[in-house]
Length: 541
Image (cartoon, rainbow, N blue to C red; front, side, top):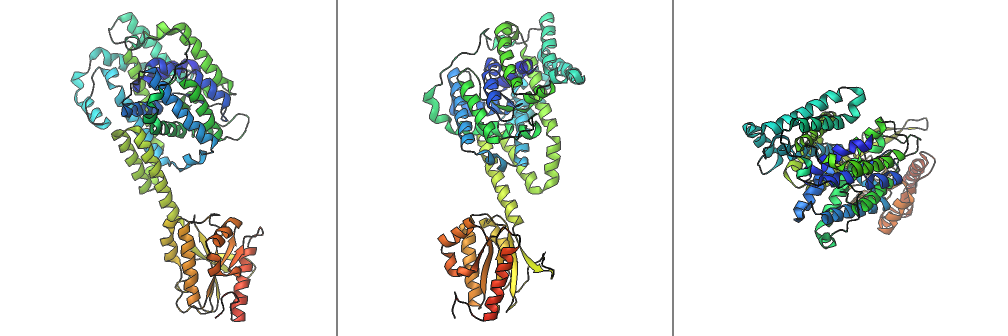
C-alpha cells in the first residue's frame, strides 16, 4: 500500500521542486529501505516530502545549479545526509526542541502556499507572475480568463475524484492513487491533448543506479545542506510522538537522526532526492496495518518493482493530474494546520507574531534562509519566555517544620535571617526581573540573606555570577551577608573558579543535600549563629 501511494506523491513532490519526477519515485526506494532498517521509530517511513523538495529546489537555485542534473541532486542529498548523521552522532536531537510550534506552524503554512503556487501552471495552464508567492497567487486569480480550459478541467476532475474517494473510509488512504489512475485513464480515452509526464521526463524501466555527486559544487551547497537537514529533521521529529513503537520501546530522536542521515547518504548515491521522515507516508503504512519496521522496507522494495515493470504506464500520467493532486496536498496541509494556527493565536501575541513573521518570510525568501531565521526566532522566543519566568520568592517557616512561599519583602530587615528562592535558568536576560524583586538592603545591619539556588542550572551564566558578587558586596557594606543554599557540585566549582567564594566566605555556600530542605535548614542555622555571635569569622570587622 505504501509503495503504491509513493507513486503519485513522490512524482508530485519532485515536480513542485522542478526535479525529474523519476527522482521522486526513486526517493521512496533506497532511502525507505535504509531508513526503516536503522530508525528507532520503527514505523517511520523515510522518503521525499513537499517541504524538503521545495527547500532543495531553493538551495540549488540560490547556488545557480540545475535541479535536473543527477550529479547536483546526488551531492545535495549526500551532504544533507552527512549533516543529519553528524547531528545524530553528536546527540543534537535536543536542538529541535528549541524550534517552537509557532515557528513550525508558520513555516508549514508558508510551505503549503509554496506548494500551491508552484503547480498553478500545471493545474491551469497559466504561469502567474510576481516577485513572491503571494503576488503570484493574486496574479493567478486575477487572470482566470487566461487559464487553459482543458488543463483546468482535468485538474478539477482530479480534485473531484479525490474528494469522492476520500469520502469513502476504505479508500481514504489511497484516494490520491485512485484519482491519479481513474483520471489518467479518462484522459487517455478522451484524448484531451494535455501535457503528459513523458513530455518532461522519461521514466526508465530500471532500478536506480549509482550516480556520482558533482563534488566541485560542494562549497556552494554547505549552508543549504544544513537548511535541508533542519527541515527534514524538524518534520520527522513529530512522528515518534504521533506514531509510538508497537512494542512500547522508547523513541530516540538521535537514533532517528542517524537513520535519516544514512538513508540520505545511501539514497543520494542512487538517484534519490533529499529525504526525511514522512508523516503522510508513515500514516498510510499504519492505516494499512503496519506493525514492524519491515513495512517500510517492503514499501521500498515494492516501489522498485513497480517502477521496473510499469514505467511506460507512469509516463502516460497527465501533468494536470499531478497538478491537481499537488493542490490537494497543499490544501490538506493548510487544513490540517488550522487547529495549530488557532492554538498559537490563543496562546500569546508573541507566538502569533512569530508565526505570522515566519509565514511571511517563507513566502518571500529562499527556504534555506527562512528555516535558519525561524530557528533563531525560536531561540529568541525561548529566551524571552524564560526571562519572564525568572522570579525571587520569599520562603517562610510555617512553624511545623515546613516552609511556604510568599512575595519577597520590599526591605531586608536588620538582625534577621531572610530566605529567598531564585527560580530561573541563570540567563543574563532574566536579571532585570530578579533585580526588581531584590529587597532594599539599606540599613540591613547584621542581616543574613539566604538565597536558595537549587532551582538554577549547574553552570550559571557569567552575568549571574557577577550579579551575585555585587549583591554580596552590597550586603557586606551594610554589615550583613549573603549565603547561597543548595549549590550543586558543578555550581560550587564555578563559584570557586570565578573567585566568588572569596567574597561569600567558605561558610557562605551550603552544598545541595539529597534530603529535601536539609541545605536550607543548614544555611538558616549558619545565618542565625552568625547573627548571635555578632561577628563573621570569614569577614572580620
